[in-house]
Image: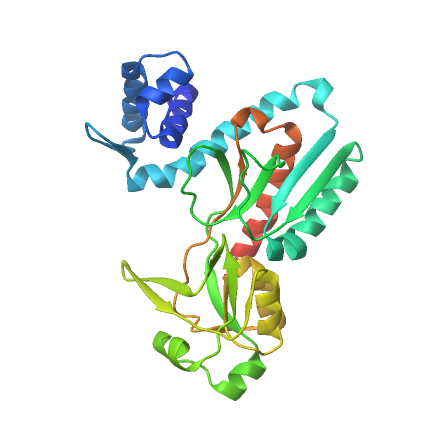
Length: 302
């Protein structure tokens, strides 16, 4: 029987990268945390951490289990919150940072409906492809693409199976040809670039047979808003490498066509992040549940 406290210590140890730091958070001895992790590993029959005298890191099995452990804890907390009658009506102000494209075109209608269903709740949205600092910026939560490198905050998965795909308009491909090899894209095609996290996203990576292939692309068209790159692609200006969630409706409607669809794109999971678990209010948990259900349906179409 898996113990909830063991799962909690596993999540905090993974976030902090240390049994000792996780122990200090809850006034335990490091040996007690280590014993809890060993018990969880025994219950799961999987090794979750690779340990050495100087480092602690998740194994492949640990990385796979982590988002489920986080969701388990979130659901338990949500259940406890739901029993507090004074919090049944969602209220207060919720400040959310969102990526430009998915924020405007996918999440905005969902958040609008969420506000309509909870009239006592106020929402403030910030759309930007610059990475928000959830510790310093005036936001409660941020929706963020990519694998999370900073383990100091808490994250709930929204779309773990999301990937990037190369897309272009049928008109562009009719005029410039449909690439048959990855190298043709860097050598002969117009690519549509955008700035992400302060850097030009001009190195497109693709997992292939356990390796990572990468091409460096160039373009005469660059923007600091990923939605513009998608609009340029629809207008026939070149090939864009975008999140499937961003372009799914365009592909299904025929406005865009996938380029080299047999080649899997770079994994781009989507998360809802917050500085501390205690800040996951009932409103945030309810919004997370709504967004996750919708986004999972989109990634299922890939």
